[in-house]
Length: 131
Image (cartoon, rainbow, N blue to C red; front, top):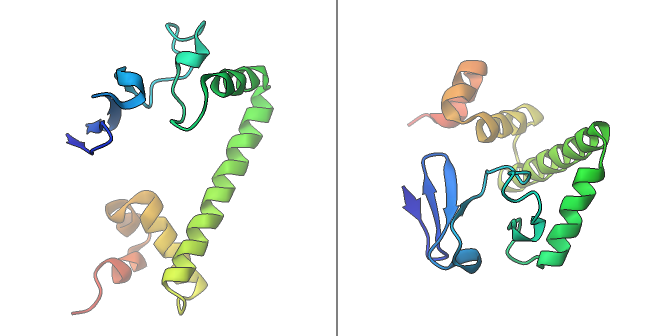
């Protein structure tokens, strides 16, 4: 278990807000927004600390009104945008890196070192630089 001053703690693979964070109510971040106990109270679901309950309610309504295809496209768009930002950050931190090295660094960030080594053996050179 780990935690920070903002009242957010990690328990295993879940994050819990407590100790006054988000109005003092403890809740796991990765619980589904459509949790049956929250279905009739979308404003009670905390998606972001800087978002008003009315904006949260509206966002949940919009998501619920989307077709599965619209949701899939939205997730795909966000995934691609996140990948582009990650690649830009890698290129900024490693300006002399080849495109293959940039890709391998993204793989390491995405999969973690152990799985990246298994899937891409050449990633080991980036993880274990020569002494």
